[in-house]
Each structure stands twice: as structure tokens, then as C-alpha cells.
Length: 168
Image: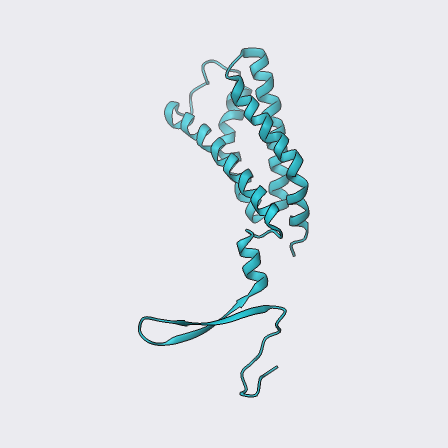
């Protein structure tokens, strides 16, 4: 479809705004803003601001876990056994160094898979760490924070899942 001057017109369902940008060398260029693409970018790929905000909270918490496990490995190295802890615990905690950022990335690039893995990761982490505190003792507030995050994930996962299902 073209206008009276022969310029191609786009369907207004896809383009909301057009604007001119003046460059320092004096030339100008017209840009078209695709409202759907802009909205998708500003909401980090998911429909709805609520789903995006929740996904950001998930990512920040996973980043905190990544920092914790990475700093332990940086301080003590791969051969450390966390002070004589069981091999399964050592392997699990060391694996979280890679699993936490992997899940955080999947929340952006493959949201439904990321949400599923986040839920499984937090369930296993909380169950394991609760067992560990019960059996060996330790810093209870850290596990309490993980319980709070697990409750947050379980209570908000539907918001993010529904938004992710609406994506093409």
C-alpha cells in the first residue's frame, strides 16, 4: 500500500510511530518504531510488566546464588570438600555454580524451560539444604532465605508461565 507521494505505507497495527533522527554530519533519517517489538523488548520478551518484574527478581536471586558458589570455589578451589561434607553435597553445591546462571539465562532465552528448571532447582536446593542443616547444623538464616525464595517462586510461577505461553 502506498500514499499519494508513492511512499510505502505500513499497516498501523505494526507501526505506531515514525520519527526523524538528525545525525551530526547534517543528514537525517526516518525511523519507524514497531510497537509490538518495542513492547516485547521493554518487557524482556514476555507479555505483561508483572511477568517481567518477576523474572527479574528470579534472575537477581539466581545471580546471588551464583556469586555465593563462585566465591567459595574461587577461595578454596575445586578440590575443597566443604570441610569434610558428603560427596553428594559437595558435588551439588559445586554444580550450582553453573546451574544457577544457566537457569537465569534460560529464563530469558527459553522461558518455559527456564521456569521449569528454576522450580526444580529451588525445590532440590531447599530440600537438600534443609536436610543438611537438620543433620549437620549450619547457618539457618541462609536456608530460611531460600525457603522464602522458593515460596515466592511457587506463588508467582503461574504469572511467568502464562506470559511465556503467549509468546509465538
